[in-house]
Image 1 (cartoon, rainbow, N blue to C red):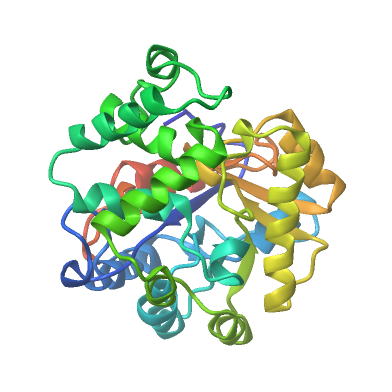
Image 2 (image 1 turned 30 degrees about the vertical axis):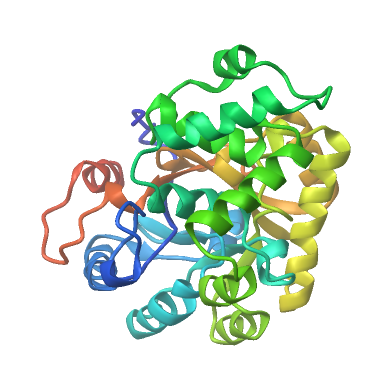
Length: 333
């Protein structure tokens, strides 16, 4: 948490993913209970002023003024949880939000590799068995593009913001670390073995439909892009990054959202100078990272705004202000 300047407006942008009951979730899948989400909305209503992401862009451009302690709610990945559990509560509390969708899930109805890996990990009792399977596949592969186990370990066996080195290694190898032709075969086989052989039915239960997204938009919710196949941009070259971003724009087309300007959420928050150039060229007005902080208008680049996770805020509507809330209370007077 950085120390903000008292002379610039602060915007709290909150990031959500799964919002579902424990009975619907795999034991090791990180979710927010709908009842906890309802309480968090009460908390947010007490201490913050809900605004749209577009209001933040307008304020940064000087065409509007934000209320005291503005907060923006954002939901990544386009889960059906967002239609069933989130959307009704947002309407009930009169709170807008922005939902970021990936084309492959929304339009093609494919299970994203990142979700396949999540549910594989949730279903496997011992993650070490996945390490063994991955590294056996590497040893048996004769593809010239496949590196050695030691090379992969040197690059990817590193803890992430949320995972220990072993789990981070599994996720990276299965999501983007291995060459695509090898990785996709392995992910598909593991998903079928541990989760389900009916990918279409699984996707139908996991993701929003285009019609549901249109209904949400018709009731005042906003939508932005979250990639084509939900691949972190920094592992791709320029042409592949462009395909990821253009795929996201096709998802917005399906919902009926204008391409200019549009909002984007970086997969895993990852981006580089190429990402920024591609987004600017396509008319992106605002893009969100996973860097944990409140946004400082006039200081932070609109294409690299930080967010805080839902876990950074209380899930008790009567709770006293926590550290993140105290930060904006102090600077807003």
